[in-house]
Length: 395
Image (tube, rainbow, N blue to C red):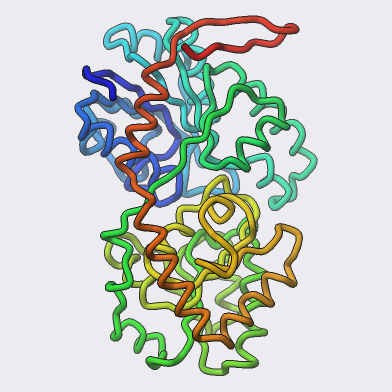
């Protein structure tokens, strides 16, 4: 345990109250570090509708900067600044360590500033941007993006990833060193007891009807076509089943026009989100582009029967036919068959739901915050050269 107060600077393009996996993770991390007595400063772009002097609750100091919409993800921004400005900012209040959560222009400026000041800098690999390119008609950029990410992360002391499979992928990309720092789940908020009969009735679901839910961004990189095809097959067997889509994104309008009978709930947060999870029965998560996927552990905590590919959070926490259904990444047909099997075997669904909830109870945020603390506050700034390539030792 770190016994004295430390100052950590977090640099990110997204932060609460924005709704996405990165913002959620950073919010929980900051909450935990603050409760352990550390000083926190955040550097991020202005968020829509906030004043220039806006501060983030629970953060000792917030520096907000000019930002521009992220292509393909306009609800988020990438920040713009120069390294020199951050050097001057940190000379006034020097952090013990800098955590760069995003690799955009703001992250690069922060990385350069930290290196100038010889402050230990740790990066997080939160988003598979190189994989996203193929879903936005820019697949030709994949190698260039991958090369930039490799160069960026190899200039930091350490890169943190949420799963062992992501650690292996980054090693294959040529990134080192890489450590695993996972994600927790709030089992008090996300719980089977949040099941809401009135909400189910608003979805036209009876007690024995099947509510199939997807929670996440309605976007091309989420592989939503598989959700649709799976549900349509399932509905042939269970005509009273309903598909509930929680979230928003560029595919929202197209999906609603093509499937007006689906239930579109939009963005949900807090207690409302917990009720939506718990009021469904079967959770479909077809994404192949996640670094983690907090929705998987939230669905587990909510006591849902899950179907997911053997990747990201599912690779770490799902055990096939014990607490969920997990299929190989290249087996779309197997994904559909797993969902159909659950729809026809209520006893299996009941067993999976109970075990998923029990296993989620062991995924604690406090322990993971302490792990993060021990990792980043034990970094030391030291450069080495091996075969013309920078590496940094951990002391």
